[in-house]
Length: 92
Image (tube, rainbow, N blue to C red; front, side, top):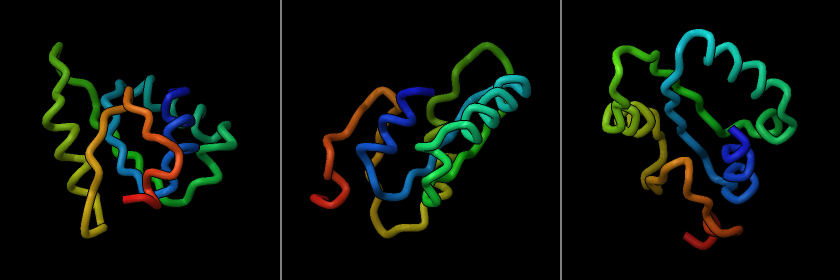
């Protein structure tokens, strides 16, 4: 979750984020997000929760959920472990 704050500091553009969480993890994330000054200061981040089911991690489903909520003509597809350089949004 700390990586999300770092991404929000580096990327000023809109973000569509799909999260794969259990009900308890979703509640924990909500508390974390509401307590984060960085996340609360952003009005252009969409959080989309996909509830855990089964033992497999549905990477393609999560990407499709996040991409399905994009409302810009272009998108920059990334994973949570990628930290873009400062100013990349403006550069692109």
